[in-house]
Length: 263
Length: 274
Image (tube, rainbow over all chains, first blue to last red; front, side, top):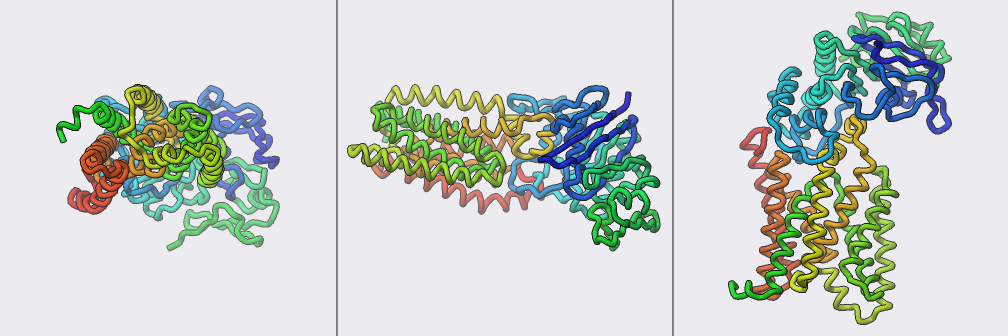
C-alpha cells in the first residue's frame, strides 16, 4: 500500500487553478518536502490529504479516501504565540491529539496520562509538560506539538511550516525529531516549508507548486536552474553551496525557498 | 440576618444565586478562552430587547430575554464566521437590537421600572416559578456544555489541529454561542443586562491568573462566582443597596487580587504554577 496516491488531480480555489494533472505516489517511509511561494498551494495540498478540501481526480491516503479526523494522520502546525495565562499545559495539548475530537468531558484517565507522558518523554518534552503553553519557548512548543501529533501513533505525519519563526538550531532539533520518528516508526512525512535547507538531508522527493504549475522529483532533479526556470517561467539560478541550496532570480525574490539564514 | 433566611423571597434569591454562580463559573472559562467578552455584552443587550418586546406583547420577560439572546447568538454565529468579522457582526447586531429596544420602551410607557429591573437585575424578585424555569434552563445549559466541552476546548486552543483532527470547528462556535445565550439569560436575573460580564468573565479571568490546571481553573471560577453572587445578595439584603452593585464590586476586587497574587504564585513555583 502506498502512503499517498494521487492521480490526475485538479484543484481550483476562487476561480484560480492551484494544480492540475497532479499525479504522485508516495511510498511508506518516504519524506516529501513541499515548497513554493505563499498562496501557491502548499497548505491546500495538506488540506486535500486531510479531506478538508475536495480536489477532483483520485486521492488515496493510507489506502482510503481522505476523511476528516483519520487517526492514522498526525498534524504539526507552525509555532504561534499563545496567551501566557491560558490554563492549558503541554500535556493537555498532547492529550487533545489523542481524544480531543471526541464529544463529552475530558475526564482524568490513568492510561491516557501514561500514554501522554511516554510520548512527551520520547520527544524530550517531559521536563516542561506542566508549563502553560503560552510560557513555552518556540522550540519547546514545537516539541509539544510533535508529541501531540505522534501520541496517536500515526502512520503519516503532515507538517505545515513547523519551522517558521524558529531559531536555526531549534529548526535543526525539530527536523532531527521528525527524522528520528520516521526511522523508528517507519512513518511517512509530508513537510511543507518555505525554506528547503533545514530538511534537505531528510528529503527523498520535492514537490514544488508555483502559479498553478507543479514539479516533482528528487532534490537533485527539482532544485536545478533548469527545472525551476521552467516552473517559474522566468530565469532562475540555483546555487549549491556547502550542502545548501540558494535560489536566485533576476525578477527578484522568486518567493519560495531561497530564504537565506546565514548568520 | 439569620431571620432573613425564613422569608421565601430570600430563599428563592439564594437558590437562584447558587444556580447562576455554578453556570456562570463553568461557562466563563470558555468565554475567556474564546475571547468572547464583547459577544456576552451583545447577547445581553439583544436579550434586553427581547424582554422589552415580550412585556409589550404581554408575554413573560425572561422568555423574551432568552429568545432575544438566542436569536442574537445565531446571528453572530452566522455573520461572524471569520474572527475578523466577529466583533463587527456583534456590534451591528447589538446596535440594531438596542434600537428596537428603545422603540419597545417608547410604545409601552408603564415599562420604566421593569426596564430598570432587566438592566440592573433584581434577584429578590425571583418567584418560585421563575426558579423552576431557571433550574431547568441551567441544567440544560450545563448538559449541553458538558457534551461539547472536549472538542470545544480543542477548537478554542488549537483550531488548525482541531480541524485537521476532524473537529467541526464552525459548528461548535455557533453551538457555544447558543449555550452562552442561555447562560446570559440566567445571569441577567441577578446582575442585569449591563453587568452580566461581572459573572461571565471576571471570575474565570481571575481563576486563570491563579492556576494553569484546566480542572482547578474551572473549580476556582465557580468558587469565585459563588462567593461574589451569594456575598452580593446577602450584602444587599442587609443594607438594601442593589445586589448587582455588590456582586460587581466583589468580583472586581477578586480580579484585582488575583492579578496581584497570580504572578507571585507563579514566580515561586517557577514556570509551573499551581
